[in-house]
Image (cartoon, rainbow, N blue to C red; front, side):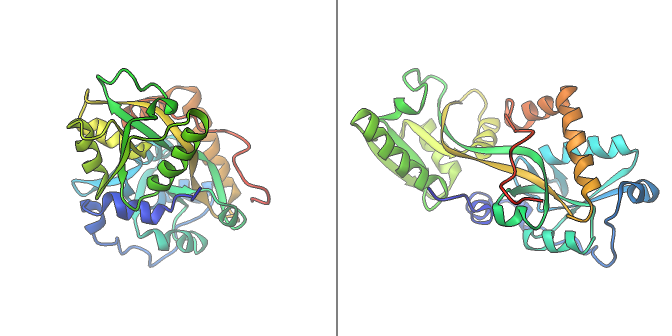
Length: 286
């Protein structure tokens, strides 16, 4: 099964978003990154973000908002400093990190073996799954096995399309029956509209996109299950600044223990995300 490409995923799902039309913040003329002592001395936590991955991080009314932003505000408050969140193209984030342009990268970066050998990944801050979204009045579909004989819809050319194809093979092996049909649409909102209009029985999309659609159309849809493999998303520290990674991980542990992380997940995703605290890094990782 193909792995998800963050860049192609963002382009496919958020091409119409105003976040992508915003100019790059031109504030990389001097180095900001440093130790926790440096951060406290300057009174500012500076992070690099590509704010184009709703609801993790995106731009609304000219400001970076989202699940990640809210976590960062908690971290800045813990340090007693202000937060500066720089909105930059994804291609410039990791090079900027290595040049100490900011303290760490706080955007949804997929953990891969290649990246993990070069950069210090934090604990996962989120996980994206391929979810099966159905209408709230749909009572027959309670898991992936129940979509045999149903019409499924997803976005054409997206990471969800091969997931749908692979799962149909699994259905045929286990039940002897595949989908009634597969409908492909130009964008995920079109898939949601087709589901609402009963053109399709089930919509397949990434969990963060489903969360956005469910916020926009409350009480219209529910999640019936997940298929395929999850993708872990984490933040990134400079490998020479492991104290920063420890601060991120310790903060996530604290917010998990005191319920603040669960509250933010409820706010932005409609429910909890099961993110691992250990055994999430590939072999050979920093």
